[in-house]
Length: 243
Image (cartoon, rainbow, N blue to C red):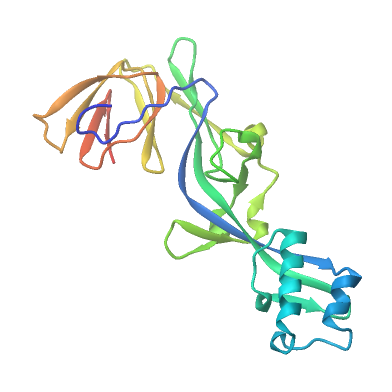
């Protein structure tokens, strides 16, 4: 860690590495229905639905225990729908997922005169913050709603199973750039970070926007992700990076 940078984070790269940044969370609500066992059905009565307030407390407790045991759901019974004619119960089951932005790091050609990368779908969700890309699902974030750009409420239709991390070529476009310039540097934003591909070996940190307060920094790889402190800038080859 460099003093006063608060932090610069380097992540080592390989030619086919997918870099990611956590940017929020997604809540998807699935409607689940199941047929009640006879032992549950008879506790509610078969004469027709009644307001929940008309059932004795022990019946409400019994039903809540059954729902939680059978489905692993914590929910208020008022939010459930009893289908009396079918002897089934339905409820909305929210699931919270981690929202990530992802980008292909790309690769240089053998003589480093060409740089290419996949323009991959931007938004992905995972069940937990894990490196197993096979479990990631692409989500069309414009089909979701949000009030704070951090928490998104998405319908199941927003998830695209046809695009997976296992075969990104099917849903991506390959981009190619001339990188023959001696200090070629190409940067892209990835959440609060930058994804950098460069032929330079050393960059320069500019602290607090002061061009007289600089520090040379040896770059760890040709392709890497970097996160700058809000008060700092970094010069790498032909690019100037800011928070």
